[in-house]
Image 1 (spheres, rainbow, N blue to C red):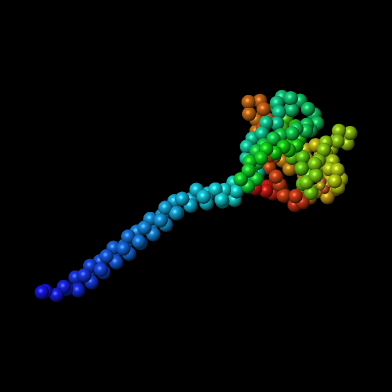
Image 2 (image 1 turned 135 degrees about the horizontal axis):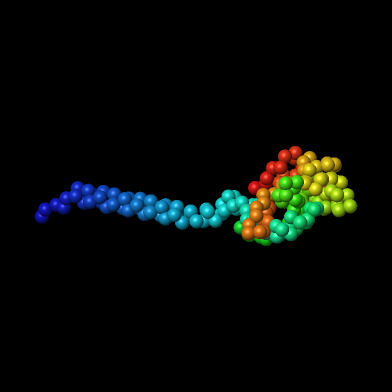
Length: 183
Ligand code: FES
């Protein structure tokens, strides 16, 4: 009776092991690729607040240009705009002043005091803006006149759209000499 050869069996064992290794490696690579593809939207969601803008980026209506242009003194208006806070989108309201410049153009000033952030108000009798917190005072065009604020009132980007004055509200760093936008 012929004796069974061991070597071919041993050889086939080696091939089976190699196939298993290959299949295992293939499955591992496939799983890794699948994981990477699935991770992209998750990462985008998690990192979204980091690259989303915190300040309002949309234009808000301030009022009718003709009406605002007819005022000889600064006009206070409340505007609303959307803001991103982490994953939430919130609607914020802020006060602005519209001032008619010497050339007739309208400028929009933030009512947030550039010193420490109190709300500045227009004082008709004095003919200037006054901050109630530390007595900062400003001319009608926002130029700093007196007190601790290190700069004038902050000017906001504005535009005309079909007879309506619009503004894009922005926040600026407090208590620094130049208007530095906070993004
Ligand atoms: S916060 Fe306005 S003067 Fe200090």
